[in-house]
Length: 360
Image 1 (cartoon, one colour):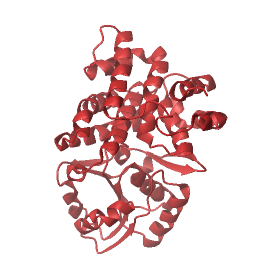
Image 2 (image 1 turned 180 degrees about the vertical axis):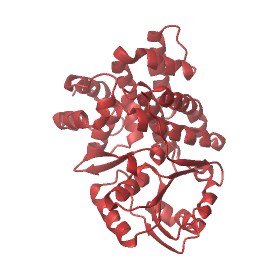
Image 3 (image 1 turned 45 degrees about the vertical axis):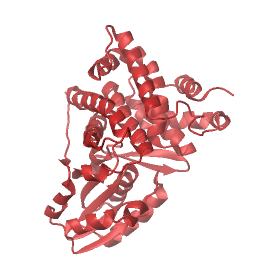
Image 4 (image 1 turned 120 degrees about the vertical axis):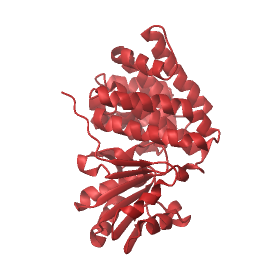
């Protein structure tokens, strides 16, 4: 029996944030980062809600820590709002969702993503960092009630951010498509998300703002797919390496994903081939289609000026191998491994580490 659910109401298009005035809330708690607090976006969001009272928690940083979430939780409990809004990228949404989980209050939660990558606006996931390790928090109660996909917030995205977050979309879609929990409905979202993002990312990176809502929607669809189907080894390794070396999550996915596809193809070649064909990469037989998928991602990675190895991403390979046991341990403990199509063992993680790092 398959089950699929998405409780999140999704509003999309130019000016979609105007819908905030219809929520009927009186007390607003807004979670965001210093950038949106300083440039006036947070203030504009507060004004759109027409709330009588509001408080802004603007301390979110990339890879939010357990300590930051605890500080925000205390502020949230003290203010006791009826509306909780997360404004920003995946870090802001993850932090707000974790705060809501630990505060145990009853808040209407609205997620307003300003980057196209994490899909956190429709997922049961939040990622917190503690002692240089990223820990996924997974609970149905933290899925937002409303997601607002406003393309007006996407016009001035930096090229590097488009590249990093874009590969996160592709990785979410590719991993959920072959994940152990994949089903008919999640496959539809994953396949469409992958093919849409793969086609539109080069134009978005080149400065074409007209395609950015398409990538934004792809990110949300990929989020809907993976929150149902699960992820895999690429994300487990990105969590481990990202917590230790603080390389952006999507950038790590771009480095690792082709290698993971090569390993998983032993048991998932048919579905990878389907994904390649859906994205227009062809392949008369599955083995050729899988090769085309890997090579297509590598070409796109180069087109987006993303690093091909951890060394190019600024990671000292000697540090990787000095900490290899700790890295592997964190990967194997990551819940994303449980939904990888092939069983994840120590030797497999080390093999991929060698491929993306290189022995020294």
